[in-house]
Length: 175
Length: 175
Image (cartoon, rainbow over all chains, first blue to last red; front, side, top):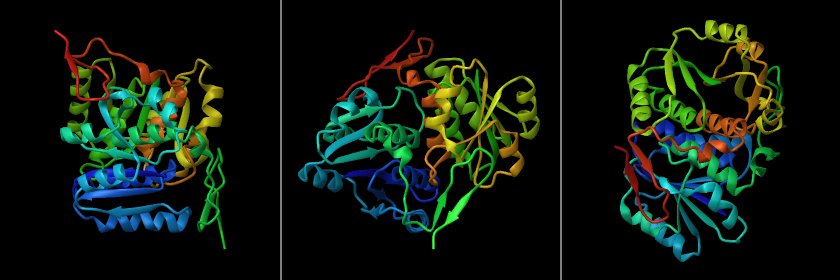
């Protein structure tokens, strides 16, 4: 089980980035996103709409405060991974923990993450040590976690399916 | 040379996503981003600030209309790659073109990209055929283009450098 925890979502300012975090989590093989911070029902609804249309059983949940979420997952035995530009390299660490049979909680923060999150994490991991994007960092982290298999996932239970194509859009509608 | 072309940027609505596109392009090894659409000097300035602080010689340019940009790059011999959820799989195609010595123009669109962009592209490529994020798609495409070497890039000419660390933030200031 791979769950992504988005820290401190802010309505308006973060809406599109958090939506991209949710859709990237789903497309790259995570099972669930937990959103903390301000409640944003549009993001939850739009993620549910994507699942309905494109398949799979990905979930988005809301929990106002993130500290209890981290604590609860630690107690349940989840390995806690915090993505930060200051961390050790994802590509060095993830292949060593990928197959240890522990569930993972991947924490995606913002610009100012408090020290206790670094301390609660088993791993503080970076994707390059350069400033870029939590969406890109999550994609690469999950890409290593899934060992690339996520790129070939096909969902048969959605309303639509794309036929990959070099020339034009080709979509099959499932009845 | 790898250049990223961002189609039809809209002020306000796209600001954060386009900023993430620029920073992801830089961190994952692209040389330049060309922004089309509405002029947004804050994005250009913030990318320049990142280069100043963190090093390298990445550039961001603005060109209102994107069609002349595509045409000009085609004439200069660039291989044109359009990222779209409808395309062929990045992981199947990029390793076959990575070392062909042609410069690349990677086009990052929005939700409604006109047919002529699909037609102008040598390659319409997808990162999964699921809806997610142009930031995630660009990161994975560049990750395949650079064959993972971008994750180890170190810039010595910035004002700051991170020492990757599992416990806390560690930053060296260069004099």
